[in-house]
Each structure stands twice: as C-alpha cells, then as structure tokens.
Image (cartoon, rainbow, N blue to C red; front, side):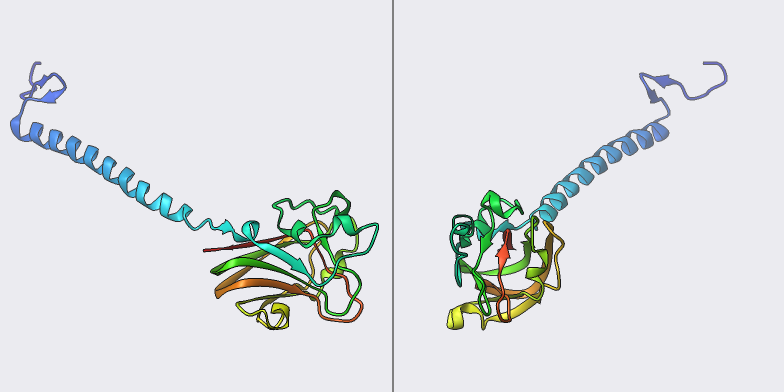
Length: 197
C-alpha cells in the first residue's frame, strides 16, 4: 500500500475514526431510503383516496315524460345512469323526454351524500343544442319533483357527444335534478355521473 497510512480492508477504511464515519453514513443513508419509501407509501394512497365513486350507478332515475313511439324504447330515464356514455341515442343509452314545458330528469341517490362533482354527457348524433340552459339542482326535497332544490350549475352548452364536469363544494343531497326551463323543450341526457361520499 506504499505511502498510504490508511489501508482498505474488505471495502472499509482501516482508520477507526474515518471507518466509523463511512459506516455510519452508509447506515444513515439506508435508513433515510426506508423513511422516504415509508413516507411515499403513506402519501400516495391518501392522494388516490380522493377518487370518489359514481353514486348515480346505484340510484334510481325518473323523468317528467318519455318520448313517444317509436323512440320510447330508447329513452328511459335509467339509461342516463347505466354507466355507458354512448352518445348515439339510437344505441339505447340516453334518456329522452317528450316535447313539453320545463322537462326534467332526476336521480335518487337513496341516501344523502356530499357531492363533489357532476358530469353530464350530451347527445352526439343530433340536437346537441337542446341541452343549452339546463339547470342542475341538488337537495333533499321532492317538493316540485325536486326542481326547487338548490341550483348548483347551469349548462351553457356541451359539444355533441362530449362530457362536461361541474366541480362542486359544500353541496350535499339525496336528489340530483336536471331541469330545462322553457316552453316546448326536449331533455336528452346520455350519461349523468354524480361523484361524492
């Protein structure tokens, strides 16, 4: 080893003071690595727990009317909560009212929940502008079929076949309504997703 006063023995420095320093640094690094992984293990699941369930899938849907024959088979209220966002009405996954004043659609979530967001998918094969001006209402009352509950959002427009998500805060309720104010209107919804806890 010539002029080097410290010799390496099996990968360690033989000088006791330096050797202890290197070994303690190595142990500290290993402990820190474990601490980082443990900390990440605690943070990542907490972040992913904010992915809420679509409460509408377990609910019961109804609407103010049903489009007439021959299209009535495709337009039932529950089609809008079937988990299928297919926006072609003739594929049987959209709701559809008849032409009427102030048509509405409602899902009963069966329990009161804190609602964090609502996503609406618009019809894609026709008539995308029909949804313009629809109001989303949330609450616990069935007075006026639930259409007098708190208005939480207004749909200005949704592109054909596309979805729009409305983020909500401090909103809770059992009933989620979509009402389209006005005369001689038709309400078609191809999916309504209600997220919360």
